[in-house]
Length: 146
Image (cartoon, rainbow, N blue to C red; front, side, top):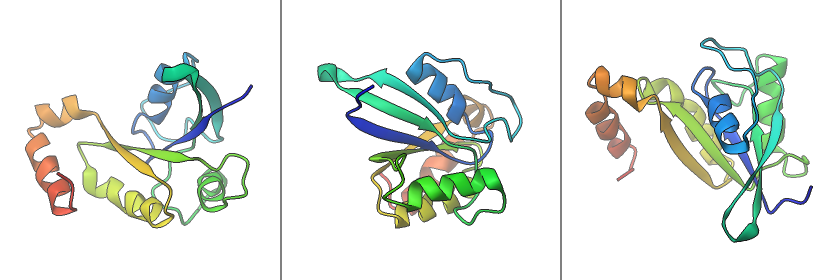
């Protein structure tokens, strides 16, 4: 199947990467409310505007690009090796809005690789309930986001 762009979903365990993957691709990958569900990369496709297609790569959750397990090493191999067949054109880093500090180490490491990246805040409903949204926005502003 031809593709026009590769998009990797990256983030800490249990931040909603596979849920986003399922929404984008229409697939039904197993999800759960605990880490370790995705232990290998999953690939699916979605249609974009202008008859373009995106290959969506759901990577295992990791806290860092310094792998401590086999599933974490998959993330490092895909992102760091430009010759890897799954190396993305863009990364969507899915972060838990209720605990941004835990997520931004990985963000900074992925940013250092130079791959274009989008930061997708997930669980904003929970952050609003805990009155963390304004705190999260102020935290991001401190990192240079507007």
